[in-house]
Image (cartoon, rainbow, N blue to C red):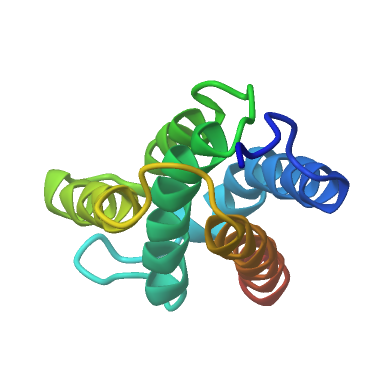
Length: 140
């Protein structure tokens, strides 16, 4: 039985809130990042690495499950890179995590299944929570 090409309603709301939070996150985080010594990673590095992986997964799963947001998640990743990376090694780590998220799901899902939709919803929720945590905890 073919899956519907429309994402279900809760995902649309979660997706919109995550996308909005990601648009604002670089603006909120930028001042605190510039205060960090160049040789040290910020205390929220692990959260941003996880967020990069989530963005990669969303970039694969959303179109697979019928979303028409095109390059939104890759564009959000680019905004994160622009705001957070000052050196190529750090940028490379972020990109590797994005690609890990993408490849991880592309090797498992060839079509949208109920399990893919559940993973999609969970990743959107986790990504939203990470953005909220990082922006509230580290924005000073």
